[in-house]
Image 1: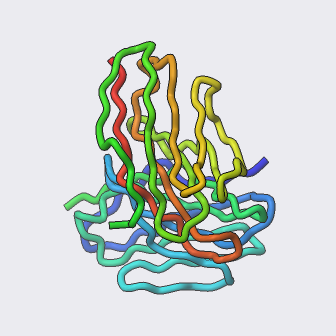
Image 2: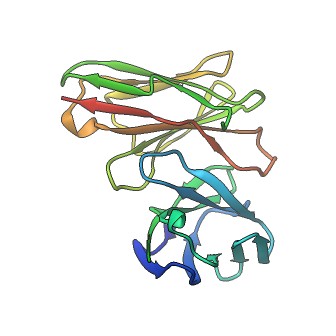
Length: 109
Length: 114
């Protein structure tokens, strides 16, 4: 079966750095997405990786290792507004989006 | 604004009733996905349509059905509603297959069954 694993919840301090991991086992691979979702709102796109390596976009970076079935989202200089759920999703060989359950990130002052 | 429109934004109905949720995808997008998200839960994939055809089914109950029309808008029908069906229902659209871009989400319909 297809499976995506993420930690359920993480806590970090304002101004610090946090890394959210995602491991996946899917039928094929056409890219991995990270989304941010604030409570009660729609998920919004953060990043897309299809090749191995690090993609940096401001305070957020995303890393992919296809051979390990592993990705992480790195958030730097954390702000209170970063408190949200972070969803990892993989596009499989049939171009179906397979979603992880999300990681709830709690930022403390 | 993602370009994906969902109506209504809020819906309150009684158990046993039937409702229809509507989604208009972004212009040019052929795929429509429906998701259910209960309170403090992850996104549960319900169904995927591509250019009018059903492509994949997730954990969609038999009481639920969906379709995508020739103009590519989609409707999700929920019948014999139960209290546990109260949730946020999201629709997302994405471009034609082979173009690896992200899915764009509508703002969701919040369904409350009382």
